[in-house]
Image 1 (tube, rainbow, N blue to C red):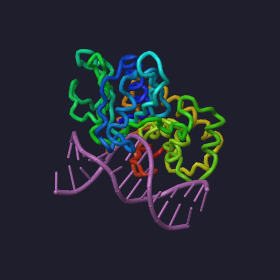
Image 2 (spheres, helix red, strand yellow; image 1 turned 90 degrees about the horizontal axis):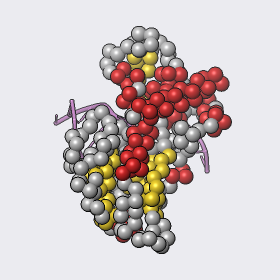
Image 3 (cartoon, rainbow, N blue to C red; image 1 turned 180 degrees about the vertical axis):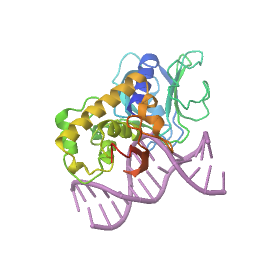
Image 4 (cartoon, helix red, strand yellow; image 1 turned 120 degrees about the vertical axis):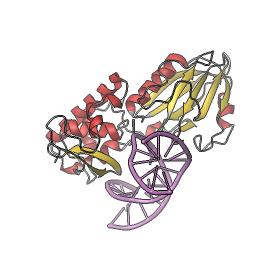
Length: 272
DNA sequence: TATAGTGTTATCGG
DNA sequence: ACCGATAACACTAT
């Protein structure tokens, strides 16, 4: 579910509602989600601190933490990755979810905290929760965000051209490579390629200069549209990922298969 | 009961 | 060492 737009929404929820609240307790007992830390390690690092700022690069979020009390050195960064099914929920001092916590379509019911895998409890008794049924999300201290490529909203034409000029990988696999460009997931990739009218399986090294230009323009436009719309579910092409669907532009049947290890849909005519 | 899934990463082969 | 392909991860919803 979460691609760059959903993660940006999660970042905004944290920014609006979780900063500067004193951390009174931490549940880091899920050893898979909190790997490679030992249980209690994240807790010990954060108690008494506050989240001071929240950043995002691609699909990764991290929070700077304050010193303990009014002085002392800052703490480690708290990194959060939502994986395939993670959501961030922030609750107020009464335990009620702050609006924006449930921001994508196949939503859990408000107040359903069954799949909480990590949590901060604030001194005011509110909380920040990572709710993640599949447990593929991740929480860790000082996450290695420098390994990520430039954020999809910030990438320059020069960087983009350098990444898509060479190699034999399918262009979709390259779009999904977070070391190359950070934030594009399976749905954004399909939407981008559909908008650029490029076959997902085309080897990146064979793209013409004009195609790379179209791809950059489409990626930019797609990501921006999804961010301002609040999530990838507003993308026009998403509803055409279904058996029997036809291309909303030209009416040809939509084709599907596996590209770059992921389920992929494309127009059988315009992206032949 | 079987399968797919909006993400990442270790491992393997070329 | 680099590049690309694949399986594995954990678990729910259909």
